Amino acid sequence: MPDARLWLLWALTALLAATAARNPLYLFLLLLVVLLVGVTTAPSGRRRAALLPLRFAALAIPFAAFFNGLTGHLGDTVLLRLPAWLPLLGGPVTLESLAYGAINGLALTAILGAFTALNQAVPVRELVRLTPRAFHEAGVVLAVALTLVPQTAQTVARIRQAQAVRGHRLRGLRDWLPIYLPLLVSGLERALALAEAMVARGYGAVSERAQPLPLRAVLVVGLLGLSGGWLGWLLAPAWAGVAGGVMVGGGVLLLGAVALAGRAARCTRYRPRCWGIRETLAVLGCGLALAAALAGQPSLVYSPYPRLSWPPFDPWVGLGLLGLLTPALVGETGSERR
Amino acid sequence: MRRVLSALIYALGAAAGLLAFATPFIPAVHAAGALQGERAALVTTALVALALLALLVDLQGQALNAKTVALLGTLVAIASVLRFIDVAFPLPGGFSPVFVPIILSGYVFGARFGFLMGALTLLASALVTGGVGPWLPYQMFAAGWVGLTAAWLGGRRASAVALSRGELALLVVFSAAWGFFYGAIMNLYFWPFLGGAAELSWQPDLTPAQILAHYATFYVVTSLGWDALRALGNVVLTLLLAPATVRVLRRFRRRFDFEVVPHA
Image (cartoon, rainbow over all chains, first blue to last red; front, side, top):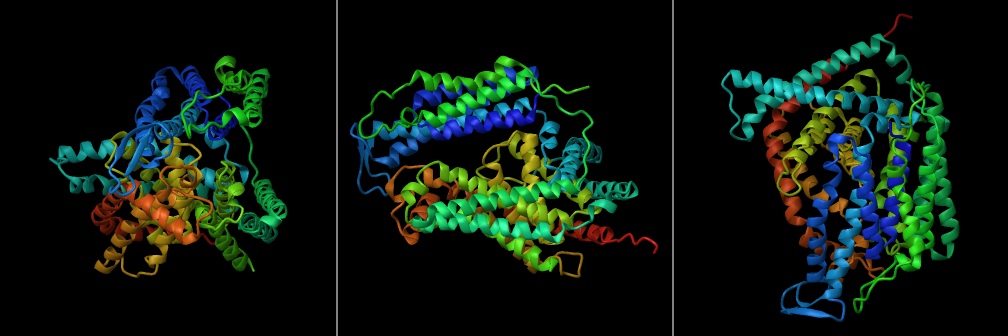
């Protein structure tokens, strides 16, 4: 069973690398890596879905190149000139602006590829298990909703069949109303029954308690620090260090409040996860890629302007990014203790 | 005291989220260092996510009893199934049937319920349709605002079960406005880093008015047509679904508004 925490770490590392890099060689390498991981780790029936980013790339890269080429007008290699009277579009269409747009499209595809791999590899219930204990009630809502989604879809099919037997045909938008309304009413009846069952099992006795006053005070101070610090960082460059500290302090207070709220909600794990060598290797792989993204800045950043040139490639940075291949190499991670 | 603190969290959380969305319009004195780097995108994403966390900690502590949990779960499931339609059969432009249930829920059940309905619907539907990504905190915040502001139309105070023509007109205008506004605010988190033509891109040395003018041009060129279809879809669905949905939701609100008072 895949460990959702590791997958989140992996996807965030890929996101950081894709946003930090504007060098097409690294972006292409990153895209290959996330696609390979996506295909090898997706359940056997969903391998084709892991290749969805390629369909996105077929649209996004040409569109981004076309859009930036028509509106960018920067660069030395002029391919054609559009009449100057055309608003926004008038001016030279250059090879460099086309290339810059294509690079942006490539970065977007790499980000989408990473999150597609995450969505394919991690079961929904594992993602729900990540809900912090402070959001116990929101987690319950989410669990109720996710449990009811397949039932709701089945109810739609049942109502359609029942209405079809009565001679109802779907011709226009208005014909969906006799399907939508029974769906809504039956869903609300089910909610009522569920609420009564939950109260009968003692749910309301614990969950109707409001958050304690000190916790709310910490939330207020944290939010003040966070917003004030960000405003200060933007508006008062002389105090940027202090403002950054206030912002980080506010963020830490908020996370502390979430941890405190989580203590009040008691929660037990039926099958706790265990940590093994595969998990450690996956973290090390992500660390390697992160180090490459942070340390390889000079060669990661590339601009095709003013004249298109071959982008630089540092093999060490490329090797570091290959650390993201770890989930494909170590196989299944996060096995549960039984 | 409890109410004052809650109102403060509510206001500050909303302000922090708005600040993150509005960051490109703040005249950044040292913006070359602050905004041009991708780190600004990471900071604003963290800002939105943390503001969302604070709002959720506070909101769920006081709003979520067993009835609300069951009702929210059911409505979120219905809205998520509607989003399946959007994913399975790509609808024109930005049209998505997910917004009208959020608006109507906020309108009938109030601001807190509306915010949770919006945020959790986007989260649940992202989980079931494979839409988890860095855009999700922004989507949750914006959809939460759709549900929250719907409560400002005053639908909770109405005594009649049926939706009046005035209420329907108000909901139609509101859903159309959010059709455009949702797209306009969702562009903001990536717009400063896009590049492109000088007239429609973010630049650090511009005044707020100039930034607004550039963004307006960018919006008209890239998003207006897309969002117009979302607004049109919202209007059609509101006209079609709102009268019956509001009637049903108001009837059920009366049934849900019971209290279990234990014997002393």
